[in-house]
Image (cartoon, rainbow, N blue to C red; front, side):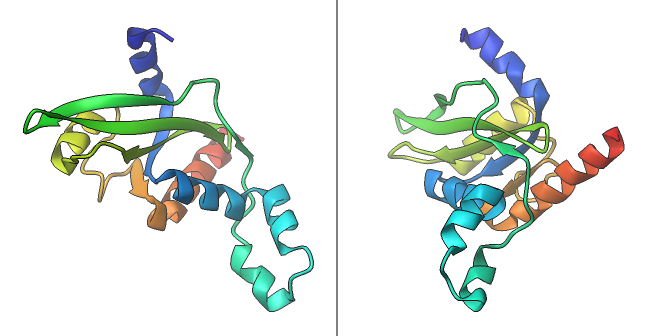
Length: 148
């Protein structure tokens, strides 16, 4: 995908979630029904309950390839984030996390604002971190209900 086309895709992102690959996988496992069923098979009911999150219609990707993006530099070293896109509840969600040796969260937040995050990542209407993924779920479900 060419660079300009890639950046055009950001206008279709419904939500941004700061999550490492591990956090992304854990969120998927918690909210994807087949994954939950496989994990809890054979576990005592009390143990199985820790995996139960609301079941989401979650496809592995939205036909937009993941990518590493340099969002700036700090002391002559690149500040890089990894982006991946999933289709959740019929909406595109962008998961991102810093991957470079040096990290500048102000530079990352500035870049994200320039590409669709509506305000500061920690309090935005369309962004959260993995710990607050329930905010993303609530927004996606609200959008889905509005379409019906």
